[in-house]
Image (cartoon, rainbow, N blue to C red):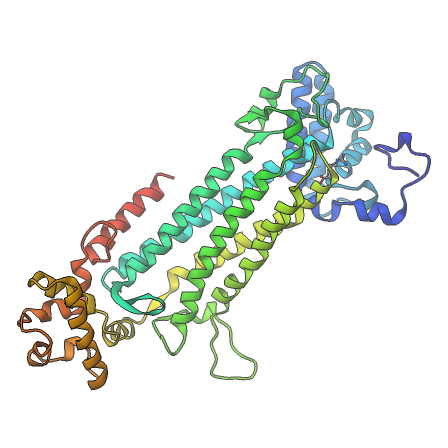
Length: 460
Ligand code: ARG
């Protein structure tokens, strides 16, 4: 028996392996909701322009709504012989409502249908992702506010550089996520364009009203060119690109969380519920969540490369290659949502070990730049000041003293312009408080940035 939807011109049934090889229903059934949503809008449009009667439209809508419920209840029988989600649902509709079911596909092709389904699906998923990013950012703002004056070492080359506030560090993550949010929101604009009406590739001879269908489906506009509408998947590539950058950011956060929970840093504690143990080493508490997020970036980068390669050199218009867009896209969506969910839950629960952080900042000569700036204010040229402080640090390393542990006499060995007031700048609090400009690490600036962040989230 040949496929009921397109078997007319065939003289023998599809080879059993080829049928399985070309089928996509095992994964594209995920699009059932969008497929039905798109079909209902298409049927309404066909009735509006006089291609379907209102009874036919109503039968189709009722049939499709029942099918949706059957799918959601797990009662629907998916058939690989029917190839994909589109033909499975259409066949079930015809079985249910008879010949009217066969009219649904008037003026439409699976090519514009599938492109529409994916766009509807991505629009829904992007909206979820946007709200998850906002939730994570909200958690960061709350934590940053609490930690506005918590001192920690800031690093360059992972070597202690200058003291910063923990709140400021968390707000660096907030900024990264703001750009990720914008990337997804921007991607959504290009996703939200409607292919329906492009039909197979050239448009259709029926008097369709694409603006009406677009309005029903809340698309911003019908796609401007039918060949392009059915064939390009650049929006999916963009989604994976935005996802890759987001995941890249999350690997950076993860890496720091992993470092900070180690005994050697001991800057933070992650509550037990976000960690797991070892089957052999009883003492272990492992930061699995950030480690796994760090690891999951790999698959998303891979999906980006898959989709770029999938589209590369494809001639216009639709090619079956495009059926391969779904698994990478779906997995990217699942991975991004999973990582955001995990971070959104975990980040607000981060407990800082303020004493440890402070001690680490103190130990690392992190106020050396402040001492140099102090000397400059006393009239020393910066390069000379750099040299003087370098010698003081070398002395500190030899004697096991931080700059702030040295007596005035000890410091004066290196420069006689140093006075009693030097200790104001050698303190960690003095150091961070002095960086008091927009974007700086001073506690006041952290609080100001938290408030700007709150405004940003409220405006979304
Ligand atoms: N399952 C196909 C896909 O995912 C649907 C479109 C098929 N169109 C075609 N002419 N074979 O791309």
